[in-house]
Image (cartoon, rainbow, N blue to C red; front, side, top):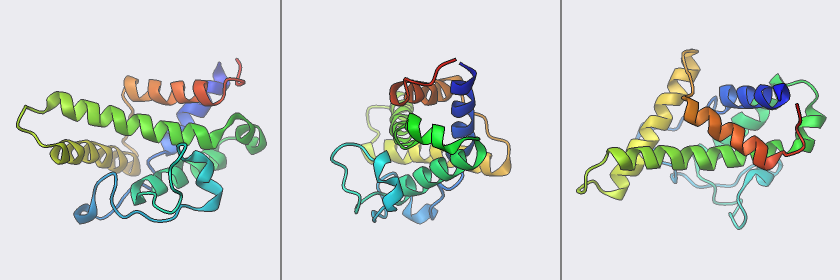
Length: 157
């Protein structure tokens, strides 16, 4: 159980370390390009590794390199599926932020405005973590924990 929380905490604290993009080009789907070969395992089934949005590439890079640099015994981490944990955490966190923005929107709010609002929340989290002031809500922390359970069921207490 402690191993699971340590991995969740380390992942959560480091996931946002490289997420910034230029505000004028902001959005979850902006600036698609190729992802590093060593990060392909974090992509969802069927996702083209040559057209991964910049923010996702940065997130996955920050997650994998940050967590592997902060947690001892990288081999054990790789065996538990760090790539899958990072990919899952990104997808579920983005969906959570979009759902949250949707719940706050009124009926006249466009889908692009909802996505922009969700991306703004994402950027705010990133900025807070870069300043050293960031805290994940209990809901976001549970998202990371669930991804760890789903991706690495062999981590035990």
